[in-house]
Image 1 (spheres, helix red, strand yellow):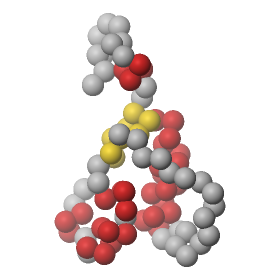
Image 2 (cartoon, one colour):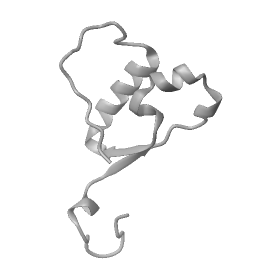
Image 3 (cartoon, helix red, strand yellow):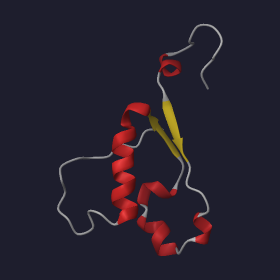
Image 4 (cartoon, one colour):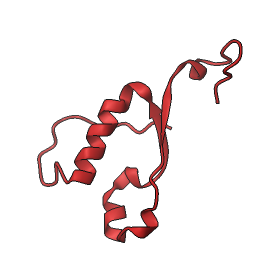
Length: 79
């Protein structure tokens, strides 16, 4: 966790990041949880990747892209 008082101790203290934590997945069907892929577990990512994360979340949960060809963009999970 960054030191909010004083000088940063490392480069990581200067990078804004977000924590994604899915909630209540135990209430969902197992096939749905499995279909989430990497979105079914907590992870963190850099703030500048927020747009890509939101697009990926929309595509996976909204069913977009199922059966579509790869658009050439890759998602990199950090954390």
